[in-house]
Image 1 (cartoon, rainbow, N blue to C red):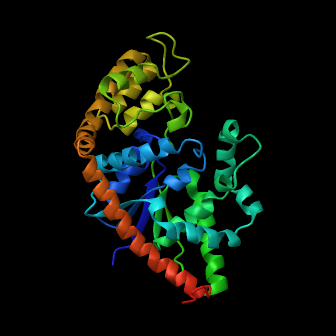
Image 2 (image 1 turned 90 degrees about the horizontal axis):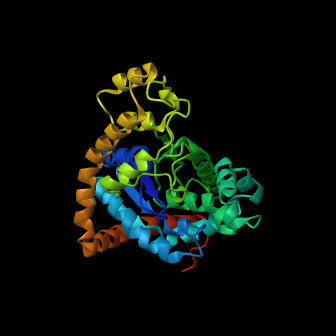
Length: 330
């Protein structure tokens, strides 16, 4: 039997090229090798968007279309909506007894994200946001996933899930599979402003961006602040445009680097060539996405069928968990 993967996205906005190279591209390649479950984590999205549920609901369909357009095949992968699997919420409650508040507060990823959300929370972080690693553990174990593809910044989340599994199995007996992290080989992708690329930071190129928007965004991107004039020698290692050239696989990367360092290449030329490379890669994805945009009922059917299949798997896990916890009364 194929090993199982759980992967997915929070529906807080359209997916960007960071998602594509950091997760989506690999996700599509892995669906032939693994039994793939793709979660659209709307419940987790509400932990920091609780005041704007309409935004989350709208983006559920957008994120589903982004996945389908990138190549996720509903005949090979199970794509589903988290909130339609109530078994995940029930497992979250059970697991919450296995994790201390102190342990959650020490989680490096949670600490970093709380710092990023200071404007939203201030000093009043919600229980839901602090505890979302517990919910993630429920996501993973509901489907007894063997592997969870993540970036390096998400490794603490997987370790927390593994701790929960070990503690549950220690108390109640062998029940849950301890997941392994499948770390993305792609480095964290910088945004157009050289910070981390993020949906909420207004520094990303989205998969849905048309060529004119891509051109506008790339043109305004921060490059090498020490290269002021055309003939100044550049430092491609600090330039996001050069990073993007590496991502989009140009055949002339060595030439670009050499010309930049020698001062023979200007930033305007570099940006113009990058716009063409991005548009070329995104064109077939956008064409396929248009297909799904024009067929909303098809997208609903895919999500409905995927959620039904996912729930049937999660029900079996919950039944086993409740048996081990002596909660199988009738």
